[in-house]
Each structure stands twice: as C-alpha cells, then as structure tokens.
Length: 166
Image (tube, rainbow, N blue to C red):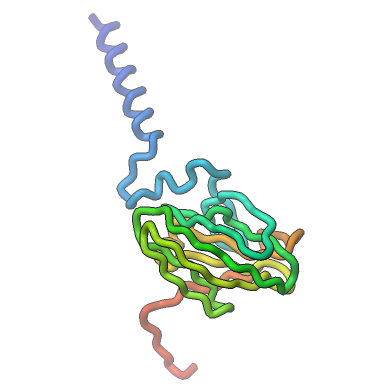
C-alpha cells in the first residue's frame, strides 16, 4: 500500500509541475508574452519579449499583441523614414511610444493605425507600449549592424512630477 501512495503522490506532483509550466499566471497574461519567440532579451537597455528583427524600408507591418511587438527590432538605413502599419492583434489596447520622435499612438484591440518613424542616424532608439512596457512590450529602431544592447532608452513618463528647484 505504501508503494501506491508514493505513486499517487508522484503523479500529483508531476501534474502540478506540468500545470505550472503551462503558464498559469496571476499577472494578467504575461506568462504567454514570450511564446512563439526567442524569449526575453535586452535591447537598447530594456527587457523585451523578443519576436525577432526585420530589415525595413518603405512600408512595414508591425503586429502588437499581448505583450510584444513583432518584429521587435526594425533595422534600416541611417535617417530613413519608414511607414509602420500597426495591427493590434491583442485583446487589450496597446500603444507605440517613441518620445524622441513625438510618437504616442494608441491602438484599440483589433484595430489598425499608421505612423511614420525615422531610423536613427546611428545606433538604436527604443520604443515601447506605455501600458505594458513593464511586461516586456518594447522594441527598437536600429541602424543595420548596430549593437542592439546599447542605445537610447527613454524614461517612463510619470503621472506626477515635482520641481523642487535644485
């Protein structure tokens, strides 16, 4: 009888581990953020859910989903303008923010939007979803051949600020 109890306990433990590995999470769905991708990466100094890179020119489609950009890195020629067709395939509103380019575009779930961005003259410029940045929903515009781990990382805007004069 002891052997049967051990087997039942072992099966229960394996089932619990398998369920935990399937991505159940209380953080609003972040467990599936890296699915179908290269996982987490650090790009332009920020943690991202990596869904690859793409060389871009002219017009390029970018998928916004829960909680990633696909592709995550857009590579192009220095100073080149690129029209992005943003397609929100997620279940919630997402956003594309690039403070240095004055871009702050909201896209409702299931909707599309278009913005024009500029590839930096050198290096990497980060972009992100202002609602889900902390969940890894971020990426970068990069000059082809740039070191992706370096670059300008915009600070997260705060809702309040105080200027104490020093």
